[in-house]
Image 1 (cartoon, rainbow, N blue to C red):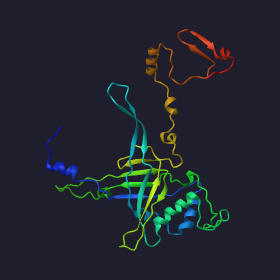
Image 2: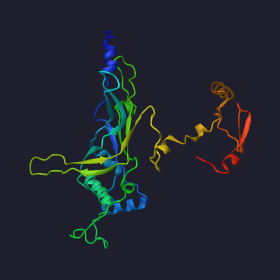
Image 3: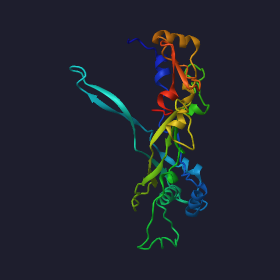
Image 4: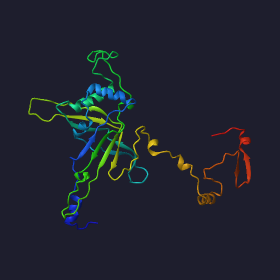
Length: 302
């Protein structure tokens, strides 16, 4: 229902928008089954130039990811009505990150080139098994996905100035509201492309490196607590995130619940789930017992 709004309402609700220039990106690194080999490969190709914090700060452009629901169209259930039912959530297939390039080590370019070399198992040095790197007969073989994907190290965090404790003052002199944060965590990410970077003798501009990172899905964690299950660094399976459901089925019914079930089904259904290991079973209505071993000749049928 429309209603008149005061100037104070407008200031409170509309004059404190989120800004696009306040964010922080963390770039991960492949873990692999043997992290020591990954570290040695990056060290051999990058030397002592790897500075993860510097690389994170150099990210000058990023994108908050999106997703959509795949739907089925139903046209025959109701006359004149077209319905759509969702059956799958579809994530964006990649995220583009743009980095400033430093003059000392060209860190973003060298870092992601090294990651792609690790995926393809290339080497900048002479390899006795593959031949010289510049040889026409040089070849390479790709790593297994678990070896080159970063489990969940790539994140994009959106925050505000007030998120860091600088709430400021309101127009009436009171304390401002503390801003929140929103963290996107990308699962199983790795670089799929490095965009070309043109250079020319025209007027100079900043050299930027844009990298496309692939991932399978993302999680969103707000500052007031996450609705997603905690991450498991050893497994990305739904079972590991949701836990074991067997305990829910091993809990017996209370006496009142069992009495209600007996009344509804004539005492023929036992949902107590605490079945004793016996060779006979009794049916309450017939008042007789059946020897299961004798009836099935010691065999069980599923």
